[in-house]
Length: 185
Image (cartoon, rainbow, N blue to C red; front, side, top):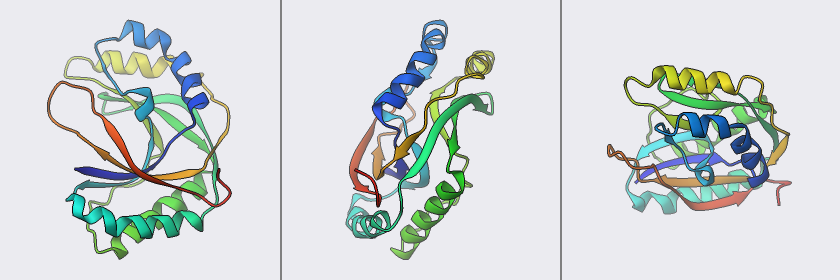
């Protein structure tokens, strides 16, 4: 199972963004759109790990979450990575977000779990394009230029598993467990 640790926007913030994406959904229906219920901000991508490691992560992540404040964040604008992945940006308490991500990574390493380090580039992945769809990704990103969502509190830290494969189907995510950040509900 591929595992990662993430934050998730509340439903009303996701609905606000989905409304802004309505034009892109219709015009670029052939892109591989992430399901709204799966939208998340990855803090640490742990990669393919045996499920036997999950019990090691649970107490460490629970302790971490209990000692960290919730963060005021917002979804903002649009962009792309390599003209193949469409995203919306994150604004708000970015310094706190970077500290939380580093603390998560340190906690995972302290559990003896190795993973590939990737720099944190705060975003929420919306869709993926195949070869030949780069122009559609660029156009969809441009359609989000003026989008600025409301501020919301990131109140829970999530350990998530995915079924990422090479097939044409939608990537599905499953919340394994989540923990309230201090000050969260």
